[in-house]
Length: 444
Image (cartoon, rainbow, N blue to C red):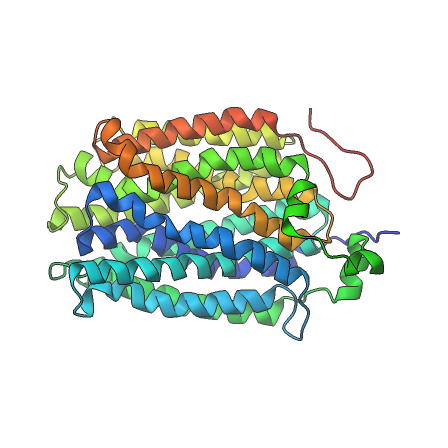
């Protein structure tokens, strides 16, 4: 008989996800500054999206392997935590190297190749460090508290985003230079990456000190895994073939959502530099000021996401709040076409934050509820493909689509809004089921 997982205190749920704070600082620094870094190194705006292809490509290869390996791992460090340690260690090294791509005396082409490879490792390592926290909630939290646990994770994720997004403009405000010689990244950005790396180290230490993972026998008891089942070997293709329907329907929603946000990360700097500051010249102070302001806008998005993450658990219907959140985000993206005041853009990005909050919490709540514990890590690793594939597709098409829809980078943000509207419609195909139940439970 399957043992029921006990309710956990708020502090234990908090500790399960606290390391997400440090990981998300790194992710926010990457999201807000990568296009700025490559544009500063000399990349053409029409080519910016291509720099985002390799990172998710690596993610789709690495994440299922990490998930499958962690399902079969147990040592004195734990089950999921060893992969957190490895991912964080790589991320820290790369965070110290990436913003210096233009400072090693390389040619423009050489600097961009170096930056491209560094970005690949950074995105892969961040995802490797991020994935254990999603798995830990699935492993250790019962269905009743899972929504709360992922909401806490969403809150910490957005709190980390605030720090990452605001770091460059904060350092500029206290006197760190926001200008640099041609082809080099300003110190305000470079030092932000250094600070993010230091915080990530501290968060990893905290995670190892506070999280106790279930030993294999205890894990099997809480997830109804027999000895015979634990010894069974299933290939990833077999698991995909027998994946619950929610894996595919939520994955469809994810496709449009993550394509939209890939375009946000890629084109927001160029878009607001054009619409608000009236420049597309990356060597001007106005462009670098716009780059700092993107960090502020993304921080506003994070605040909106934090506030909306409090609202999400109050809705009984996951589908209703999921679709509503994506529609609000779509309105935010499309409104950027008409706004030329940098402060009015706060409204747009608060709305975008609503979509982001839903994307962080609801897909994993719905999916993990439909899974048994046996292959939880593998399925979550495979599910990362619904994050990586859309980014690969969007990045591959960005340079082609941009001139077709008008050539202004703000047009890509409008396209992002349209993609979220399609995602909201696709939520209607999602039906929730529960993996530990003998009968499927479907939301009305």
